[in-house]
Length: 273
Length: 361
Image 1 (cartoon, rainbow over the protein chains, first blue to last red):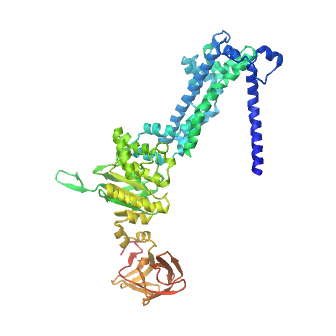
Image 2 (cartoon, each protein chain N blue to C red):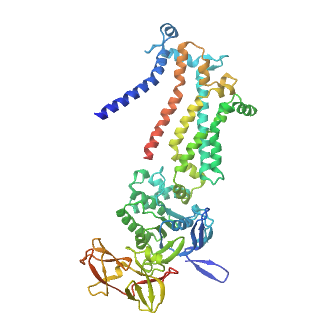
Image 3 (cartoon, rainbow over the protein chains, first blue to last red):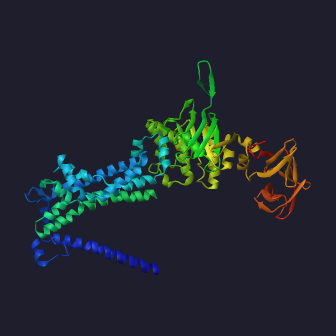
């Protein structure tokens, strides 16, 4: 009986949390399926309307921006390239940095690691001018490379991988050595497969981080061709239902990434048991 | 046998594995192995035994190449291997915690070393399947190590070593994670496989029973120094030092501090005739618990303080003067705590050690 009560209370609390998260999003979604006129006269809607296809296709393909040079679809593409680039490069650089720090006899490896870690205290916003100057001198303004490179190394991801590598028993490396592996093969055959779950986690984290970038792309791009979704959110001057539709669509890519990689996540958890 | 040319006229016989004055000093100054020399012949099964921290594993790891050698030379099959990378030494090692590759199936665990040597897929398949059959793990080839029991993991670890057909097998306390029953079973199996394949093997353990049963020869190591090398029988019946005498044999050998005058050992008020003319002021007399012979008309008598019943045997704990000792006898004899018993000690079955040097007299 006691169990029953406590589980009811738990579920009650969870449900409240869920409602707080879901309801605003649902209201935006439901409202986005009505015509702007209807919302302007009747306020936010809780039930679905019948303008879904009309509204969403209009938003996706409408030329927008100050010079009407970009569509929402292009913004999604830009954001996707940027976020994927940042996530992929971060995973690669931090995997390799951690490998170097843990497995090679680097003098002062700990100090080097803490130097890397300290960069957490210097977020992009703080070094945005010097970063911009470097990128503009490299002629990378208005390019994807310029958007991606300055944020493609992550101290926190390096930290995660380093801690994980340190937990791998030395015997594994020794056994592999006796089996005739070299340092590159050990990295590819052992460390990467073993850190699959970790890679998925870091990828999700860095994808969302890259997707949410606002100030950096705003500074790095003068051409509307490189606008990202988050920048677009601010400059959607369309009708109210168009804006709602755009907000809803902007949430989809990170959710998709999480759904896909979550499988790998769970697989990893079960394997390790 | 391998012969190495020293100069144009002379050849010297070399052992399969030779350790010459091997010393290991860790960066923090600890001396783990000190001036150790050892020759191991092809096909031999040698056991390194000693208490934990005595340097036996370090010695093994130096042979494997996982640990640098501070001083000395190791040669395998006629070649000095000091500077050769572990991957090139053609040695295989079974680790204490097995060190199986957790993300690979049993098949890939065994095949990995072969793949790295560029062996064709077909040959790898055949070899792995053969070894898997030999070890009775052919049903498990597709499983991951996390889905195996301790004994099965042990077999896979052995399979991984066997499949490569190395020059030498190194076992680093591989049985210490198994339960007692499985340990005995695997011990027999290791011995059988080694006989069958005839590959030179070195086995590290702190368990003297394992050492006695497995080894063709035993190397007893203490504090980084080899105390004695010999067959199990030699080590048991003629321990060179007090340490070896105490370490090998269960229950432990009884060691009595005594004074020897003209071949007669005085332990408290007990006298044992050693049938020689030794004179030593400070000596230790070692007597194995089963060399104390109980008989109704024995010369000496003592009170049994405690009787431990072990089934077929029993162990009696008693005291001579203030020195405790134990004796092992058949449990058919009727003896209880508090009883007085009579016994004889033959002067020829005892071991005499000089206390100043610790070595056998």
